[in-house]
Amino acid sequence: MAKVIDGKAIADAMMNELAVRIESLKSDHRAPALAVVLVGSDAASEIYVRNKIRRCEQLGVRSIEHRLPETTQQSDLLGIITSLNNDEQIDGILVQMPLPTHIDEKRVLNAIRPDKDVDGFHPVNVGRLSLGEADAIAPCTPQGCVTLAKSVLGPDLSGKRVAIVGRSNIVGKPAAALFLAENCTVQMLHSKTESPQQLAAQADILVVAAGRAHLVDESWVKPGAVVIDVGINRVQQPTGSKLLGDVDFDSVTQVAAAVTPVPGGVGPMTIAYLLHNTFQCYLKSVG
Ligand SMILES: NC(=O)C1=CN([C@@H]2O[C@H](COP(=O)(O)OP(=O)(O)OC[C@H]3O[C@@H](n4cnc5c(N)ncnc54)[C@H](OP(=O)(O)O)[C@@H]3O)[C@@H](O)[C@H]2O)C=CC1
Ligand SMILES: Nc1nc(=O)c2c([nH]1)NC[C@@H]1CN(c3ccc(C(=O)N[C@@H](CCC(=O)O)C(=O)O)cc3)C=[N+]21
Image (tube, rainbow, N blue to C red):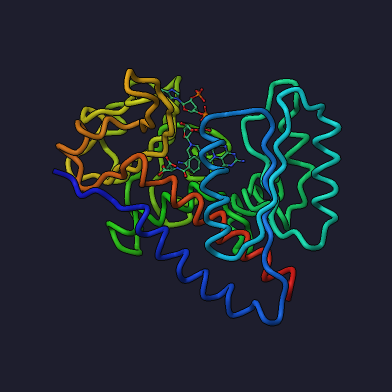
């Protein structure tokens, strides 16, 4: 049976450290502030926003939410981003993805000030990460994946073979950049990949971000591998709705050395790195 990686506990420890640092700056500076913009409703985004608000409260970070209807015009959304950009009291801006189809995601991401882009999705930050520059704001979920892998394998991931299922701009691609920066050998798998199971089964670290409930079973996993499940799929069951990962946990646990659960794995780490990135932006802002 594989070890279950406790993302919740690792995130809690990170947050406790951050809370101490925030508290120590409180007497001399304003509190850090994070703004979230949610257009329409998306199950995974709702969960994210709810947990983000809770963490902000725990840490003494000011949390600002803009919940806009599905029918919001792009120009109105851009107007809100401009006012958040210009507000010197705000350190981080996060616009929930996906956006409704009538809104141009690229225009929106481009509009966020790179130094407030706590998601790390602005082309400037994507470029900095891809160039391996130290001051890049790196996306939260991929940072969480690296930290979870290190919690099992230790701080040096050099030479590890990493397979990533999914090539989205928000998870798969930045995860590849971060594992490459850790000197791993990285392979990307996606919906057009032939025999993905066979390729995945060569990996020491398997990261799954496909958005398909229970896509990955033990046939994808090398014995002794570390499996990181990013998927958040809300499925309806007779007993109510339930969160399922992209990994069939009961199957994979038979062969892997360690697996992240859903919930309680990558999700809490994403929130932890969101607060971490916000704090970094805050430090730059208050000097
Ligand atoms: N826990 C967390 O903190 C977070 C969780 N998530 C969750 O992670 C999942 C992925 O999110 P996101 O990256 O935005 O998803 P996207 O839908 O943007 O991308 C999915 C990717 O998976 C690939 N894919 C789909 N089906 C298969 C398949 N059968 N075999 C191989 N590859 C496949 C797609 O390939 P192609 O490009 O060819 O279409 C695509 O690259 C979702 O469940 C999301 O809710 C997301 C962000 C944070
Ligand atoms: N611009 C943008 N950035 C994102 O990072 C982003 C996004 N848009 N859109 C939606 C996805 C999804 N996502 C989640 C983050 C945390 C949990 C999370 O807290 N999960 C808990 C859930 C526990 C629970 O409350 O049930 C867990 O897995 O344990 C879930 C999902 C971030 N995303």
